Length: 162
Image (cartoon, rainbow, N blue to C red):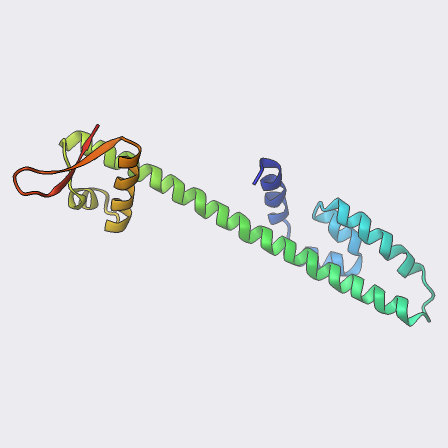
């Protein structure tokens, strides 16, 4: 996603879902203005004004107005809830990336300090899971930061810093 789209989603995620729903239910275009969805506000206004101005005895206009109000309320509220979910997911991804980066640095420091390390050494030093450590060691090896080889004395797989 581009930075503009991400920024727009983050702004939308800060809006209240309840406030959005209530405002959009009673004044549809105002709900879209609140959520900074200006194009939809304009489109809704184009449909809303004639329906509000229609004769009260016109059942078709009243029904269409009801559908417009209910539909815009649901759509705008769902947009806010989705934006909140996406923002939460993005934050979790950033935390995972930071955690993975920290683990890479820890493993490189350990390999430099000890000269050679096994997966068990890395698990004990970092207190991370075996799968996570092995995956990170593989990434570091693909990046040519460490090399895997077998120790001559017992054949164990060891990792050395390049």
